Length: 348
Image 1 (cartoon, helix red, strand yellow):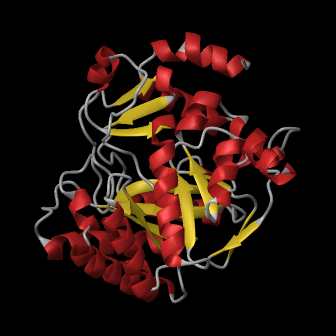
Image 2 (cartoon, one colour):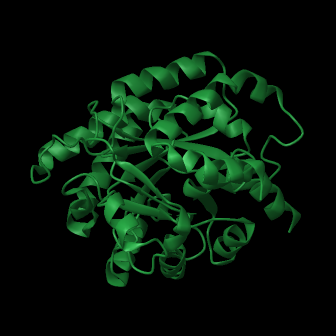
């Protein structure tokens, strides 16, 4: 067992999960300058991948949710992630749901979150991304994940479109690719936007806005939930082909609690929210295979959900993933984990 695993299991699990995240992320950001200078174990060390017209230094990236406000992109990339997806960012700033709202289930190597898209809002994040580009940090592939502001009524289609359009207008100029998030379980009504009838005008609106503000082809993807039925997964795949999207991110967290090793008391204490980590592995792999069979070889699929080691990562690539993302395993395994996975994949 690594020193970090011992520290995590014996110390960090006794600290409130959100507090531990905030302190750990702050320490990482403070160490960003020396990290960029390099060390024997930093840097992706991965096999380059070209997708959506972008050169990725390695197939493994950091999923949205860790760096919600684009505060630590370069430090995170220095740990070995081939790309960093920031967000979810909403049109307006919002505090998210009441705390506590982030919980660990160590027996399952899982996390439950009901953060509720807490973020600084599109205007603040856009300023931060612009300042970063002004400092000439151009070597990291940055995805931007956008979602619905909670205060926007989910049944007001015009308001929903305007909210996503605002985020697109402000953030698209600084993104290497853009992800429309309609699959978090922690914003009321958000997952209803995954229905094809509601998703089509939303993606159309985002595409038009992105084209208008960037004057280039900005890759556009949609992120879906693992809890969709197979039929609905295939419907989204067909829509992606119809609208000529650049890709699909599969999958977000799950509301399922089936098959957990944690005690019923631990699960009840964690409460509602999206479950991520190892329990998501099988369903995320099923969704990946469904999508790849449906969309053919060209569309980019970013596989995320339950990737815990290099073997999991290799299984996703063999099943048709173009790129990979992780979050929960990074929390459990520590700073060396992304570089290790990249190098294992490259070695094989």
